[in-house]
Every structure is written in C-alpha cells, then in structure tokens.
Length: 99
Image (cartoon, rainbow, N blue to C red; front, top):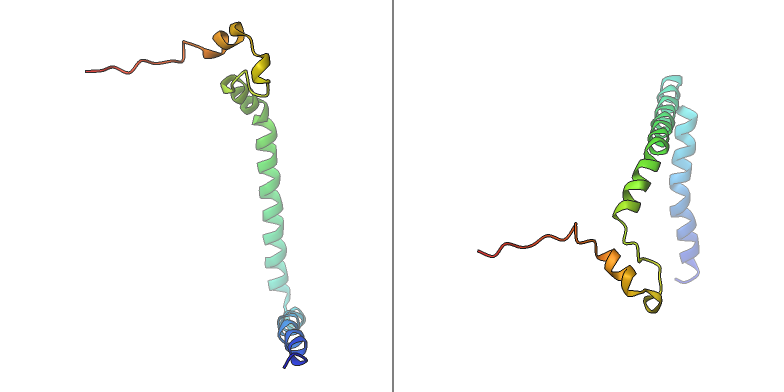
C-alpha cells in the first residue's frame, strides 16, 4: 500500500493539468479575447487604484500623525513631566455628565 501512494498522488495531480491542457487546445478566439479583456480590465482597475492612493497618501499620513500619540516610541523612563502634561491634551478630554 505504501508503494502505491506516490503513484496515486501523481495520477490525481496530473488530471487537472491534462484537463487544462486540452481546454487550451480547444479554446476559440472569442474565449481568448474575453480572457485578455478581463486581464486588461483588472490591470487598469489596479492602476487607477494606485493613482488614487498616491494622490491621497500624504493627506492620510498627516491625519494619522495628527491623531497619533506623541509619546509613541519613547522610553518611559526618559519622558519628563512636562512632556506628559503636554501629551494629555485636555482639549480632547470630555466630561461625562452625571444626571
């Protein structure tokens, strides 16, 4: 049984390859054109998306930097009391109203 397993794997894995090969031989010009147009549409779609990202990446980066914590990446022991007070940003703090 152990000797037959590799041969079974080879037979099972070559069936899809053979089916793809025979399909490409039977493919007509219309199917080829449809596939080419699908590929072209996909590449144009991603090209447009990349242009959009390049145009707006600086705006998004500035928004992220505005909302980022200024103390990120600093060693806790090296942060002074002044920096901590400045990082608290009381303008953003909101009170919860208790009724």
